[in-house]
Image 1 (cartoon, rainbow, N blue to C red):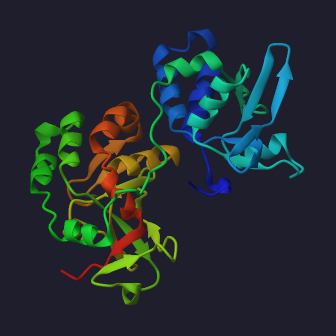
Image 2 (tube, one colour):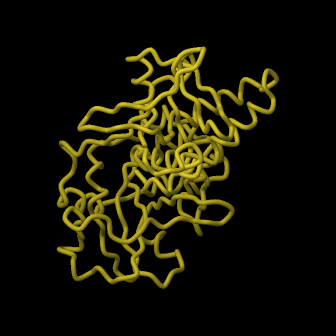
Length: 307
C-alpha cells in the first residue's frame, strides 16, 4: 500500500462527479464503473486503530449514521484540518465488513467536495471483493524463483502478442499469461550487484530497493515483460533489475494505486491493457492468473547481464 500522502482516486472522483451531475439520468454503465472502481479502492477514513480493532468515526444524521471516506489526504484535511484526527487507509473489503457488522447506513465520500453517498444497499452490486492481501505461505523459495527465471520460455505468449488478429482477445491472452513466466523491471540509481548471491538480490532484510519502472507516455502504466531481452530495450542510464511477478497481484496494485493500466513489452509488442480492461476482467484475471507460489517474488531481484 502507498503512503497516505500518495493515495489518489482520480478515476473514482470523475465517476462520482458524473453521477452527481447527471443524477437520475446517469446511465447504468456509469454505476457499473463506480462499483468496479470502489472494489479496488483504498479510501481513507478517520478512525482509531487499536491492534486489530478499527473504530471508524461516524456522523449521525436524520437518516441514520454514516461513516466518512476520503479519496486523498487533501480531502481528508478539508474535514479534519487540525491534525487531531488520524487518517487510515483500508481496502474497501474492510468497509464492506463494517457495514455488515454495524447499523451504519452507508458512507459519504469526500463530504466537503463531491459529498457522494454510498448507501449500504450498494454492497450487493460489488460482487466478490478482490484479494488484496497475499500470503507467502507455501510460495517459492529464492532458489525456486531463480530456477524458474533461468528456464523461462514465453515463446507461445510472444507469438500470440505478435499476431494482430489477437487484439482484444483478452480471455485468451490471460490464459496464455497464466501459463507463462512474467517479469517486471525495477530501476536503481545505485549498483546493487554486490548484494547478489548467484544473481539473486534479497530484499527481505533491506526492504524495497529501487523503484518500479513505469511507462509514462499518455498516462502512468506498469510494465510487464516476457524476457530479459525485452527489458533490455528500455532506454535508461539507471541500473536495471528484473523481478518475477504474480500477474494478478500486479493488476490489483495498478487498480488500487490509480495507475492507467499495464503495457506488456513496451518498445516491442507494446500490448496495452487499459485500466478499463483490467477493471472489467479483474474477477476472471484473478481466477486465472493468481499464482500464489509467486507471492514471494516481491522480495527478490535478479541481476541482468549485458546481451
